[in-house]
Image (spheres, rainbow, N blue to C red):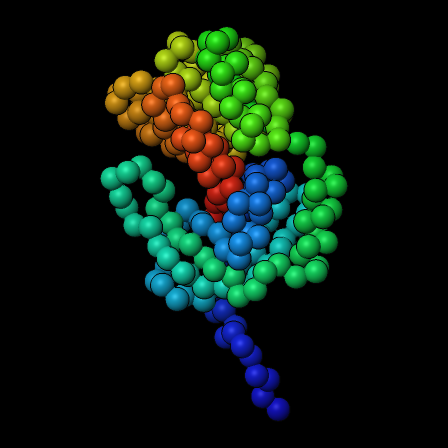
Amino acid sequence: MIENRKFVRAPLQLAVSYRTAGSFLVAYTVNLSKGGIFIEAEPLPLGTRVHLVFDVPGAGPIDIEGEVAWVRPANNEGLPVGMGLRFDRLLDEHHGAVIDQIVRDFEGLEILLVGSADRRSQIGRFVHTIVDCDTVEADSVKIATTVLRDQIDLVLADLDTAGRDGIDIVKLARGAPNPTPVIVLGGNAETERWARSLGVTHFLSTPPTFGALQRAVLATLATPSSR
């Protein structure tokens, strides 16, 4: 007897990994619960069937099937190239149980703030409104080196006020074997070019508006990497 399937079995398996359980939970809130996710990767043709396997630290793989619903090609707006994947169905009871376990074990997001004391204070107030997190402040490379040995989910660096130490901290975060996502704040095109050459996730003009920072923080934390 031939089994009737609503969806054709996906021939292509695509693995996506999250750096921390915290970034997965942000992605779940922003994207997964709505039935899809954006992945930074060379876009596949629209309609391509994929079997997705999410690698979540501390929880193991979560798999689900779907298809490429939209693509974002190279652009002049600094937005990441990638594709939007639509799931065949929302996460089932098993996946929900895994996510519940992640939530129970979750120790919280850790965000490192770099810049002058005034700017760290301002950005910190914004960040605490955007996501539930702990913030750590660094005004020197020595402090940042110690902090980055722990599980930092995101670095927010204001290079207009952090001076040379700020530049070195961004290099340190991005140069690690498992690079920490970085959002750079700056006031000129030269700083932006330098930051993007290091692969920072977002560049925002200083001082950033709450809306711009909110979009950048959520997009950064919710975006997995393909492998």
